[in-house]
Length: 76
Image (cartoon, rainbow, N blue to C red; front, side, top):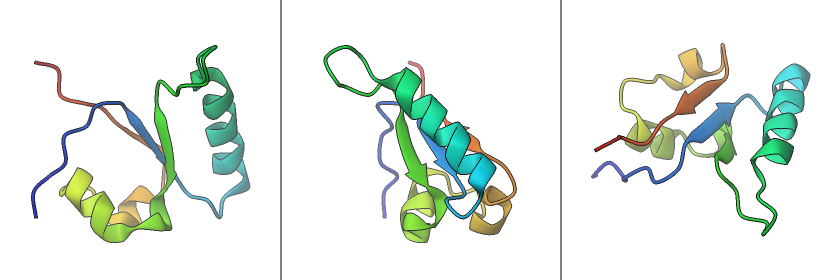
């Protein structure tokens, strides 16, 4: 499996945590452009553990649940 290229930052959060959901919602509102595009992608951590491993192989899903993470695209 190849690692997908990140084109936008991705905010990963625990969807079972009320504080995390609130923060993700706040970021979601701030990340929308006037045209409706998003400047950052927002994903619950538990959506797809395999996808999480593909995005960042060093990030363990159980460690990811302990705090909000932002995966940044590589800067050339």
